[in-house]
Image (cartoon, rainbow, N blue to C red):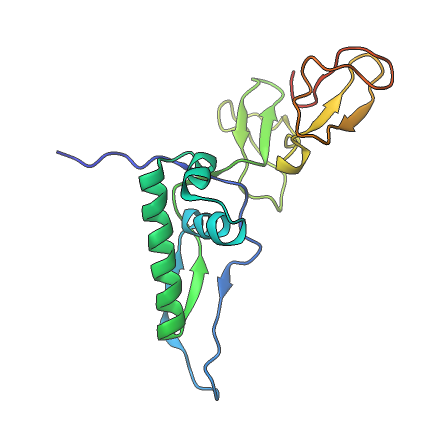
Length: 181
């Protein structure tokens, strides 16, 4: 019996760094073999230890079960501890992930796809190979951005409310999400 396929884990973007390199006290060299911290392991540490979420909250955000999240988090902590104790470089890379941000759309076929390289614009649609690709949709920070279809006013709802079925504060028309079609 073959093992189950590993589900993609959702993360909100790549970390700002690609590696961490320790310095040995008094100089000297560090271990040559780096520790590979997968992107989903980095995200697990970020959600639990930096954002102070529970395992249940973090697992829902990453789109995995709570036991799976706990295994990811435990592996990440073991790797960080190994790096600290054995003085090894941490490389943050790889894993089976997709970014929640940086979604793009093809103007020809309408395909929405995830563009993982945030430093560049997407070149080609993965479905139809068209080069007519539009700029990425708003990211997580723009989730509450709303637009009035009548007066084109754009504004953010402060109370994390959904724009749908709300009225424009400028003209009174019913508003919609900016990212909707």
